[in-house]
Image (cartoon, rainbow, N blue to C red; front, side):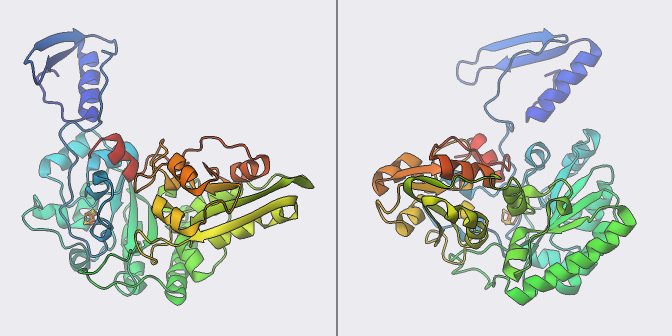
Length: 432
Ligand code: SF4
């Protein structure tokens, strides 16, 4: 377009805009197999082109080999798209996926600044440069410039770009005083809008990898104490809590989940920050029917969320005729250490539920590929239904929807409420 090569949808939109400002945009199309060429110009109108992907030249892959990388811990046999180690600043801008910035070329940095690709979502992990290098193990031959791996200098260079940041915390590695120091540094940068602290996600497939432990109660409580202390200061100084710990820290520490206003609009929802409160906040119906036609409803979810959900649904036990059970499903696919609902595969449901043991089995929308009926192991909802000899459906994206499904027995399509996850981007980008 306008004699400029177009690598992605952002460049396409930019050239269209520049063309409109200049009077017209010139487009040249080339058919890859027939070799046919077509050129035309547009003045103000939308040319009507549709693209299969938002990235045309391939998703940028990461230059790191992080100790805690989820992809290195994945079992074999999942969809190929799940093994792609993407780290693309363009999908960060378009969909909010977190990137490390270690694979940025000088041109990329210039482009981010010129085109104001703001906000970006950045995995900082620690502001201690040596520690970050040790945690992330970048491959020297894949890192395009020394500047790309200096996180402080990069944040400072991107001063005109708003940054939502995250710290994946590993017990004893980048928490404790290092967490305080990193928060102190990030809060000193005006372009850093918020920090999400999430615990390292582990699976049972770590065989050859560095030994890592999940957070225990005391360690999780220590992270929360530090985060809360920092929040108090930030609230007084900036009017925002600035740093947020993910739900998993509260559940692991046994601390009550904060109320809705605490999350200040849920900017970091995709990171599991406030997801449980958001789910619960829609609440149960004010009035429950005294009785219903006799039925047994089973709700399958991950071990982490099951106790919270069981407590939230407890009032439904008063409805005569309705028998409900929240079943904590063991993750055999990724290993028992993996307790989130979103990583349960169809085979885990089959292993945890007996055929015909309920009239209706409800599952979390996060267990399905976005907008489809397929689970992580490509089993579909209807296949589960056939194998289990009972109705299987997605329960709802919040407590009110789930309660309505349980009480009415009517099932609807429920898509995850958290928007386009990185996983969904890969699916959408057809990176199989
Ligand atoms: S940057 Fe992400 S994809 Fe790359 S190694 Fe680290 S955790 Fe894995």
